Length: 155
Image (tube, rainbow, N blue to C red; front, top):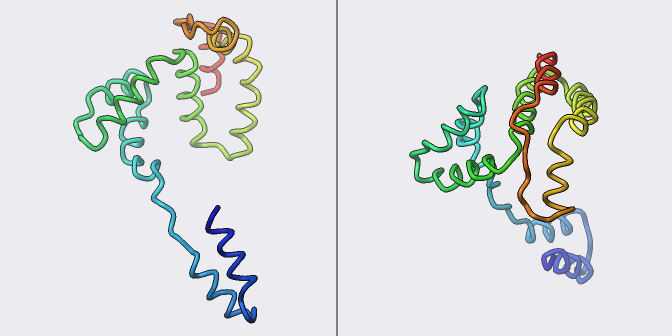
């Protein structure tokens, strides 16, 4: 960044480089980053994505009344409606299961589900629609009883 080059130049041009002198130069270049967009949306994320079921999440997003969250909620709803039902169900299930697991357990669960997802999920259809045929018209499965059974056993 431009700031990094200016900092380097200031350090090179400094007449002496005592600890205090270096700290003084560095403090001239410290800037506070902008607040994270996710932090700004934290209330909305908790409000809408804390539900147990997909239909509750989608209904909550659709019914958002707060003007500061309305555009974001509409965008999230649009994205969700384009995605695989099975993928959404799986993600929601993992989100709820993960709350009671360690990071290592979460990573293990993700790894174990990876093969199942390739075999029973919509991953291949998504690749076909976006990369192979490039028609961007995935034909998602509505339901997959076998995958639903596997997910149910995880509870």
